[in-house]
Image (tube, rainbow over all chains, first blue to last red):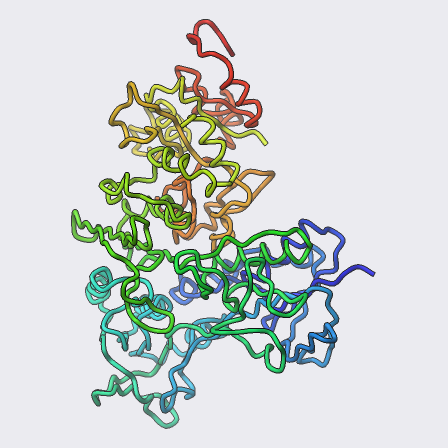
Amino acid sequence: MKPRYLIIGASAAGTSAAETLRRYAPDAQVTVVSDEKITYSKPLLSYYLAGKLGEEQLFFRSPDFYERHGIERIHARAVGLLPEKNTVELSDGQKLKYDKLLLATGAAPRFPHIEGIRKDGVFGLRKLEDAHGILARLPKTKSAVVLGGGLVGLKAAAALKEHGVAVTVLIDSPHALSQMLDESSARIFERIFEQNGVAIRTRAKPVAVLGDQQIEGVQIALGEVFPCELVVVGKGVDPSLELLEGTQIRKEYGVLVDDYLRTSVENIYAAGDVAQARDVVRGEPWINALWPCAVEQGRVAALNMLGIATRYRGSMRMNSVQFFGVPVISAGLAVLTPGPLGGRPGEHDETLESQPAPGIYRKIFLKDETIVGFVLVGDVPIEAAGVLRILMERRVNVASIKEELLELGPELGRLLPLIAENRERFVEREFQELVQTVGV
Amino acid sequence: MERLFCDPRRCVGCRACEIACAVEHTPSKDLFASVLNGELGPPRRRVQTVGAKPYRVAIGGVVLSLGCHHCDPAPCVDACITGAMHKEDGQTVCDLEKCVGCWMCVMSCPYGAITPKVKALKCDLCPDRQEKTGRSRYACIEACPTEALFAGTFEEFQKVLAEPVTAVWEGTR
């Protein structure tokens, strides 16, 4: 019998794994289980909410992707996992046997434990149905409160503003985007939001969602009430670990995986927002719940499931976003807000910073002459993100070019001698070709 | 798959490839018309000085022209949240209709080969050049006055690198 590869989850990691399995094993039996009927891009939901994209533009693979590749897609929720029987139980009663299993169950929005948070009219922004729910409520919404000043919260706020809703963002932390930006970079974006009519309140801890039948407002710890008819929660996500209950699979924040994305239980792998894998900057397992990491992990896990031993190099925190036309890319330990998933003091020992004009900003964090984080704001600075990121990812000592880091453009040529010196860390064919070509 | 390479011994950093590339990616595909109509966008390859600040020592230093390497697996493809950036017969192609300009690919490309300009712009290997203009296959190669640019496999290019450099009029290729 042909081996069965079973994947739980059909978003970035699950789809990428299915695609890879099919590419390298054209005849294998590949089954994907998802509690969502269609596969769409979650990062695009804020674009959809803002009215910038239609529903049909949310597909990152064509709607017939699974069918066309002969991949079985089951619309059900995986509710039980019996590793000793190599079996997954589904909400519709089916029991699926597997030879290799991939957990790509993703993550779910983290709702604060406050009074009224489960009221009708409080939404996350993680699934298409969340966006549908918010859009359906807009005709009777004059004001909205967004809980959380992270990426999802601020994207939701900007999208609601597009619809003419008066938006207030309540942020527990001392500044917005505390998982992505340091305080001075975050202030740039707080100002941009204020200039575009979105109210930002920092150090505002919500304590209750008020109202009986209809939501009437959100109360914060200081007692102040922000009247609204709609609440959107963007306070991060928690990995969906329900399937692990009763199993021996090791977990911490998420499912712990080794450098081959194997869990602690044989024949079970994990990838995407549920997986806690190597972080190259931190040097310890971490969850970087990011689209690019999920896709890469899905591919690497699939190769290992096929027996093609492939080491996962590791991820790092990184993100790229634009708010009201101003782009920002940040990566690594640009965050120094303490917390379980935040930064810790002493993670950098030097900061390079330049702000040649308002709205153009570069900040690079170093530790022992190695880049450990950066923030780039504005059209020109962000072009250098890719080359800075690879220097950080490959832990290259940048002492020899430190004076120029703040003016570095997207030119890799400048870095070729440095890459040649560290060529054992740049194993990709393209890097090796370049080093050979210039003979440095 | 055929890819583009630059011989740094021949490249003098004149940036003719950059202007030819920028012109190729305009509706008119004509230098005069594209400047006149304000169509000119950024080039998808850049002349770079190895180990020095850009253009500081163009003569005497090592210079070469670089663009997308069409690598596989491609980090930009992994990073794309819309599916716009994808692989097609070995090439890395961006479907500009689908691109929303999130710059996840810009963040992910280790070669700095993607330019964020409303959409993600990169070397597309001149897909409609021959059909629309009847000219040679690649704009950058045609424009290069020193024959530094080469199309082929890396193995073929290595043979070029192994040959001594001679004047263009001596016709090594």
